[in-house]
Image (cartoon, rainbow, N blue to C red; front, top):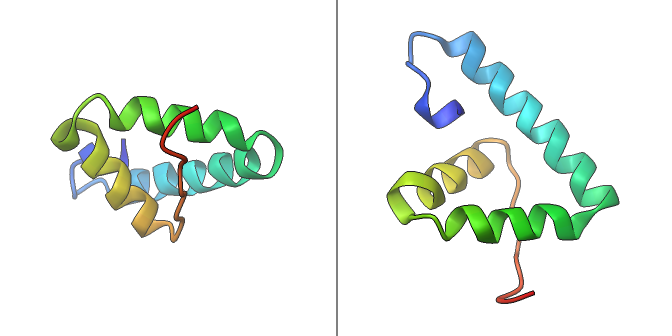
Length: 71
């Protein structure tokens, strides 16, 4: 969502990124496979529509998730 927000709504965008960071951190700590499978699925839906916005958001929150090639 953060990548699709109107730049004028900076507070909401910041909140989106904070929530994403908290959720990703929790998933990585407790059920890493869930976030990895979700990323593979989302990235597979298209580069411009999903993969690039996901990469930009992960970059903004300072998170890198290396996903195995297959499950």
